[in-house]
Image 1 (cartoon, protein in one colour):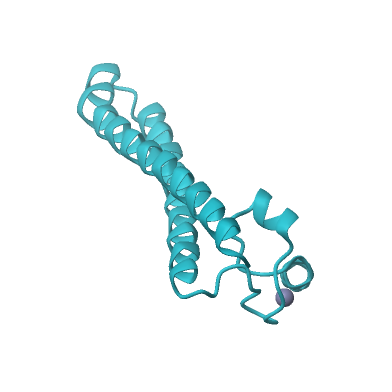
Image 2 (cartoon, protein in one colour):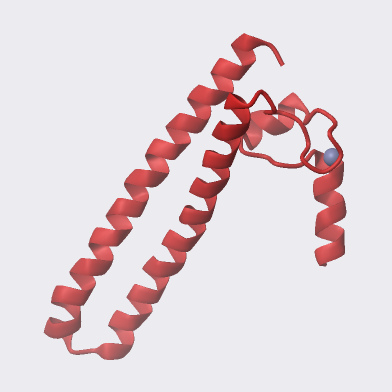
Amino acid sequence: MNKKDKERYKKKLLEFKEELTGKLLEAQNESKFVEEHIAQDVGDKAESSYTKEFLLSLSNTERNQLFLIDDALERLEKDDYGNCQSCGNPIGKKRLDAVPWAVNCISCQQKAEEENA
Ligand SMILES: [Zn+2]
């Protein structure tokens, strides 16, 4: 991968990271707010725990994605970005454009999904 592409993906990854970090902080604040206010005011425990659960699941997904982004940024530093971590072949540019934190090439990803199904 040439330097220009690397810079482009790095920028993309950092943008995603910033967005996710913002969302996570928001979810954290909201969860705190629910705990401090809604849980007491409404007095409806079922509803507030549902909201909390939703916020927690949201932040888990996003935390996981953040982890993948950090991983991809690390691979950029180590000059290993854009290579499939399973078979070592280059990951297609189309795939990296859509999923810049992709770990596997499309055929390894499909294989993994078939095995999980
Ligand atoms: Zn592969």
